[in-house]
Length: 215
Image (tube, rainbow, N blue to C red; front, side, top):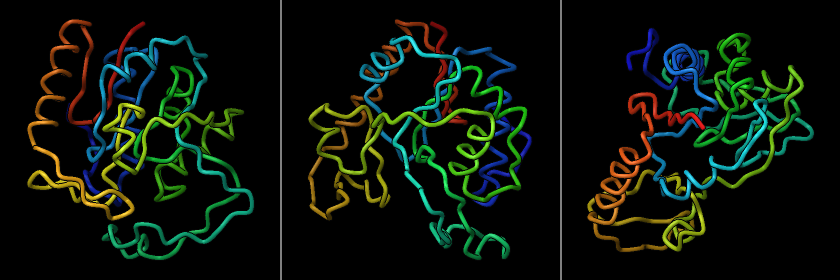
């Protein structure tokens, strides 16, 4: 899927809005799950999760609780535009962390129709603020962990490689413990995922990292 926007960190809110809009137009899904490209997923556990009935206005993920507001410089080194390299005030209000979150159909439509990509450079905060303005609050579901062990033990649906250190078969978790893994582990996961997708007639949009499925 090719989106009509810049593909860089400065324009991430634009890309997410375009991706959600395109997914709704092309596939009319019952839900959308946004997954970053540095997140590894147990597809069978994800399918178990999405098989459970949810409200169309559902918004779920690992909730960041923000009760007083704060000045954020998070990820500032990733931005190239001068205006985005300045700290930004994040208003009080909870939202789902960006690596992976679930949007029901109505929540997705609100993002497509009402999200202002220029409101905030922080995509996950922007999503949460838009939904909160329309009466939707996040529900906490630990879709992913930054630590790898729960993922290896299949106690987590997904693992976020937060430090981008998965390389040459070696992984460091967020506590900097080195875990030796054969690269084949993830190759096998991808093979199983492809087989499950075909078996369940699941549609996967790789470029946008959005998984769609009609229940």
